[in-house]
Length: 348
Image 1 (cartoon, rainbow, N blue to C red):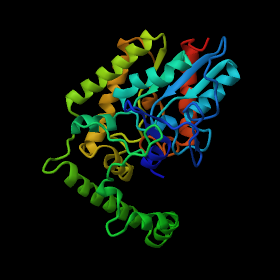
Image 2: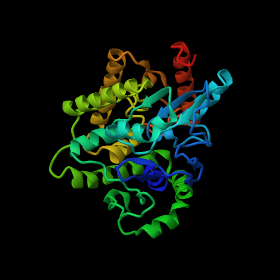
Image 3: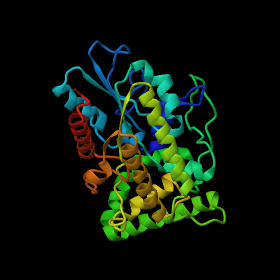
Image 4: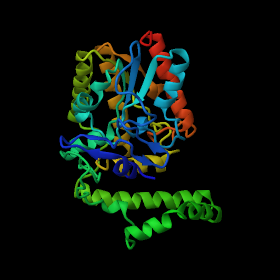
C-alpha cells in the first residue's frame, strides 16, 4: 500500500480545488463516514453541552500503518470518552491537504461542525517541495464532484522499467514472500545492500527528471521556512477569529542526525517519495527548522503546545516509517495530547 493509492481511492477534489474525503468511501480498513471524515458516523449538529475536538493533519493523522481504530485521533477519543462523556473527537484529516488550503478547507467543511478545539499536526516536506518547484500540487484523484477527470502522468520512479502496470499488480501479492525468501537465502546484510542500491538507482532517475543539472541542497531555503511559518500563523489567527482553540504539536519524525545511519533506507525512501530537491542532510534540516518554527509560533501566539517530536521514542516500535506511526506510536501521541488538554484545562 502506498500513500498515493490511499489518496487516489479516498480523496476527491471539489470545484474550488480543495481535496476532501469522499463521503462513505471505503478501502480496506480505511472507512469514511457519510459526512466525509474517517471513523464512525457522527451527527452534523452538535448536541447541547457537547465539546468537539477535531484532529487536523494529513496521512500521519488520518492513519496509515495502524490497525483499524488505532490511529491516534481514535485512541484520543477513547481516552476522552472515559473521562468526559460529552467530549467528541473527530478525525478531520485529509491525505495530501496543503497547508495553504487549510483555511479554505476549514471554512467549507469544518465550521459547520462547530468545533471547540482543533489539534494541528502540520507536515512539511510536500509543502517545501512545492515551494522549491514553484508549482501547485496536481491532484492524482479520479473524481471532481463525482465526475471523472484525467489523472496526471505517474513519475518514472513509480514504474519498473520493462513492466506494465498490469504485471505489477499481478506480482504485487507475492512480493512480500519473495523478499522474505531472498532475505533468508542472501542474508540480511546483502539484502539490505541490494535494497539500498535500488533506492539509489531510483533516486538518480528522479534527480535526472526534476533537478536536471542542479545538485540537491543540504539546507532548506530560508524563504521556504519563512513561508511555512507565515502560512501556519495565518491559519492559527483564522481559528482564533472563529473562536476555535488551536492546539499545536511539533511534527514527530523517526530519523535524526544521531540515528540516520541506522535507518539509511528509510531516509532515502523519504527523500525519494517526498522531496528529491533536498539531500539526505536537507531532509533532516527541513524537520529541524520547521519544528523550530512550530515551537516559535506556539510561544509567540500563546497556543497550547506539546513537543511530540522530542517526546516520541525514535524507534521502529513507534514508527512505521519516518513519519507514520505504529499502534504503539499512535497510543503514545494520543496520551500526550490528552495530558496537554487536561493540563491546560481545555477539556473542562
